[in-house]
Length: 434
Image (cartoon, rainbow, N blue to C red; front, side, top):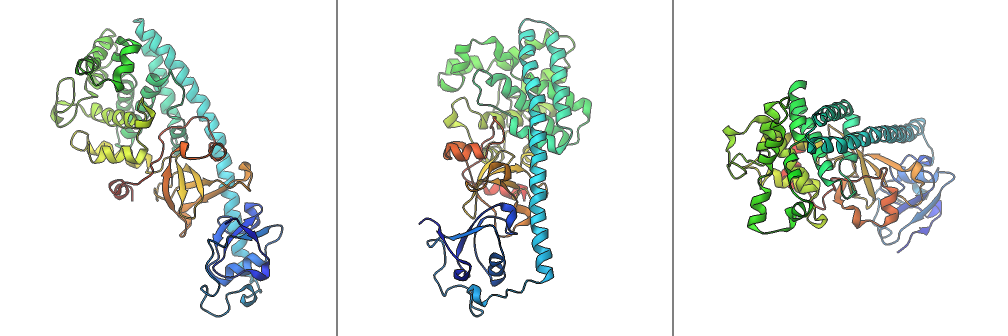
């Protein structure tokens, strides 16, 4: 049933209320909620410049609410103490601060996107040069890695870049995958405490890990995910060797990078390729890149319907792929991304839909979320810090295609979406991040 208008005198505990008006016109965290106590009734009665509505279907039956006397507004204490006023003002101020922080984040996101677009442009030039055998490609690759390192200096930039990794743009899959793997490898390596010169070698190997695929025709690469032919798979599994051969022609490429290119599809239990190496025969650098590569391939499958969501992919890495991947790198990736990375679309326990804008590093299951509300302009959207709220949490994550175009547009502060959130949560992943 739709919301119906209600007067202040009709308010009572147990009603599911909707406040039509600015998010800053009241101290409640959201504009829709169930009234739980007489103090909330008194607060609602004191609101001005808003319209109050209620949903009969979501409201408790009359008489089933507050057991401590009359639960109607007539029984509520209308005397608002100075402490109440101060508390209300503080809560509204917190909303203003969250909005200000979000606006700053949007500006930061736009700046990071400009920088990332430049890295993408340089990547196209790099691939052209390397394919032609020109060493200028390596110079460009080093410049790209320097740019990514600069972007990832701060946590804010790292979170912003999570919103930009990947794309809907066709024809750029190879380059975008390389950049995704490079970025994730940098984050993992940093968290593991590796030094800058080590991280730069890992980043170079990660950026060029699939360079051997340039040996294949577009038709062969199309078969990469769709063909079940053993012969086709055998040919495609040669790309690590092709990649090493390609880069060996450039004397300045560090041997650690060559190892990454050759070993990124190996697995610690010997089930990988091209050599079936086991843990002792695989370098630490390659172990890092193979985790980033496996994660991105799971999230961004060439056939969209087969792409996993972040928590699904993390669960696969932590459980099904556990024997083949370096556990420390997998746990580090989970710690860096969180279960709900920035850009994740989620449904909250109060039924609202929102977009994760920032991760609370101390409470990764309770991020900061921008909430969709058709009655509130996008510029004034509700921003909830779930770490501050006891009664609201994330119920589930959803995919963009599950939302209407109107909601998707409201919740999309950027044009690029990647690492879609899951419709279910893995207990294994939850236990790791809590």
